[in-house]
Image 1 (cartoon, helix red, strand yellow):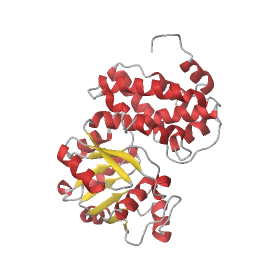
Image 2: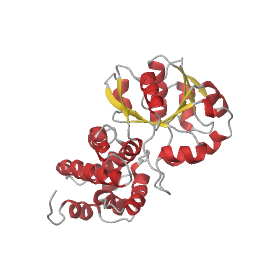
Image 3: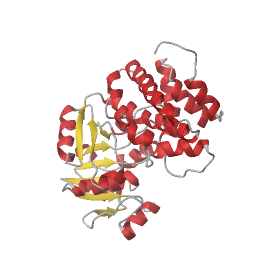
Image 4: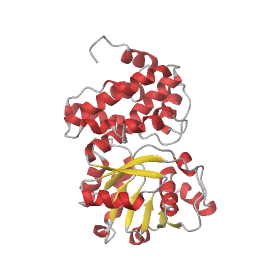
Length: 317
C-alpha cells in the first residue's frame, strides 16, 4: 500500500518510519520552509529516529497527495483547518482515505479535529490515537493503540493495514469519546507535570481517578459513551502522559511551575481553552481542567490552585 505522511515532526517522522517498517511504500511531506524537513532531507535523522532510504521526501503537497492511497496527517492540531484549505485545492482527494494522527481540539471553537476536517472537506477522517512514545517504539517496545471513525468498514480496513507485532490496534466505536479523551489526557498531563514540579507527585493517583471521572461526565453530556474515557485514548494513555520523561505535556507543566522555558509543542495548552468552551456548552463542571486553565492562561498561583483543587470541601466520590 502507498502511504503519504503529512508532517515531519516527532510523530510525523515516526509514522513514516513505522509505515515503512511494516512494508508499505512511503512518502513524507514537509513544507519547503520547515527546518525539521531540511534536517531530515540532509541527514535522514532527527532527535528521535533515522529514516531508511526507502522513505521518500517531498515539499510538493500535490505530489504527496497523488502518491498516497492513505493519507496520514500528523501536524499541530491548531494548524489543521488552515492546512485543509490548502488540501482542498488538490483534485482527487475524494478517493483518498485520511487518518488524523493528532490529539487536540480546535481552541477557538472547541471542535473535534474530525469535525474540523469534515467541515472543510465534506469527507470523513479516521483518528489514530493511544499510548506510546516514539523513543520506545524505535527500540522495539510494543504498545496498544486505537483507530476510530464514523465508518466501521474504514476503521477495520485501517486496523488491518497498520497492525503489527509492534502496535496492536483496537477498533474504536465511539469517535466522539475517543477524540475528547485523547485531547483531554494532555491537559491532565499538564497537571501531572505541575504536581511533579511542586514535589506533590503522590497526588497523581487522585489526579488520575478524578481526571477520568470529570472527563467521562463531559463525554456523556455531549453525546458520547462515558466508558470510552476508561479506554486506550484517555486512561490507557495516562502512563505515557503523566509519568514518562518523554511526555511533552508533563514536562511543560513541570517546567511551567519551576519557571523554566519549554520550547517543544505541548498540545494541552491550547486544548484546555477548548475544554473550557465545551464545559460551558455542556454545563459540566471540570475542576481539574479549570484549575490548569487558571494557572496557565490566567496566571494564578500554581501551588495555591492545585492544593485548593485537591483539598476542596469533603463530598461523596
